[in-house]
Amino acid sequence: AQSVAQPEDQVNVAEGNPLTVKCTYSVSGNPYLFWYVQYPNRGLQFLLKYITGDNLVKGSYGFEAEFNKSQTSFHLKKPSALVSDSALYFCALYTGGFKTIFGAGTRLFVKA
Amino acid sequence: NAGVTQTPKFRILKIGQSMTLQCTQDMNHNYMYWYRQDPGMGLKLIYYSVGAGITDKGEVPNGYNVSRSTTEDFPLRLELAAPSQTSVYFCASTPRDRGYEQYFGPGTRLTVT
Image: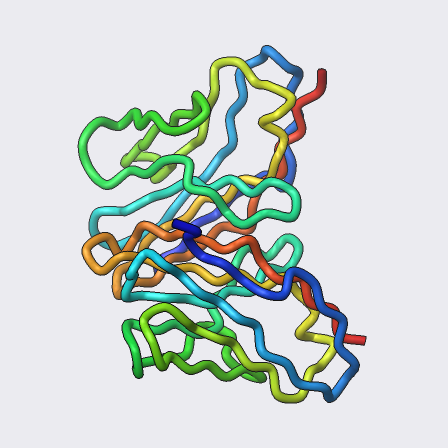
């Protein structure tokens, strides 16, 4: 079965420190993976995607994600966190047929 | 280019009432979706449409209905509101040639009491 999991409900990090938000997936075939961010009272915004190519994908607002096929992971990273990065982050897997599975979300708190 | 717009932003319904959540996109996207978001549950697909006149059920369709008479509009209807339908509802659309690239509206927060 195709699935995506975000093992952490919440991640806390100090401003200026690196951050990682974890995502693992299960799919038959090649995965199409995405990260979205949701700020309070807003819809989801696209951050970055992995379709094919380099395992390190760069996206908006200084975020990047590392695709690891052997570990079936797609972790979101940023070298230096900002307070304004505090938000809800969703990992998503496109399953074909114009359908996408979303993870449960990870709330990121960046403390000043 | 407004993208995906949703109305209303907030609504409180009494049990048994009905309402329609409006969704419009101006990007000429063929595919449109309705999701509900419950705390800690991610997004669940309610209904989707691949074009005008064509709709299909998603993961959690019970208690909802949709229609798609134009490319731009994809309203979601709640006929007999129940407390279990308290949620935040998001509409999204994708272009035909990049069906994985979702564009979301700002959401409608619905409370049923």
